[in-house]
Length: 140
Picture 1 (cartoon, rainbow, N blue to C red):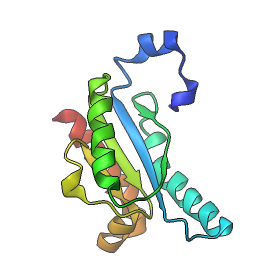
Picture 2: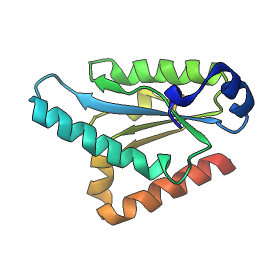
Picture 3: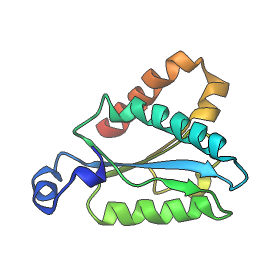
């Protein structure tokens, strides 16, 4: 579910069920052409589908961070901390192309990087891997 689909009243009703916040991170540097930006956003959209589609109704997707900067990982950690203070039990960050320093994001429950996952496994196995990790997170 997207943040923009939520009203004050529906949030009050659904907050118990929507316990997981998803933060997309595009990782743009500003050096990309418009066509390259479009391709990056399409890759991120497709990667987000691995969580948004099978877990619709339990995950709330927040606005994406598009541009990377030097302290991005620490900024995302602060956002994760604030989202948990606002009521989310879990926060997941997903990026298709961006680079994040995982040790600087301890408040995130999961961080998925499609580019790193493709180095470790076949592209066809990524969706099931991501789904498995999300289910494990919820069980803990």
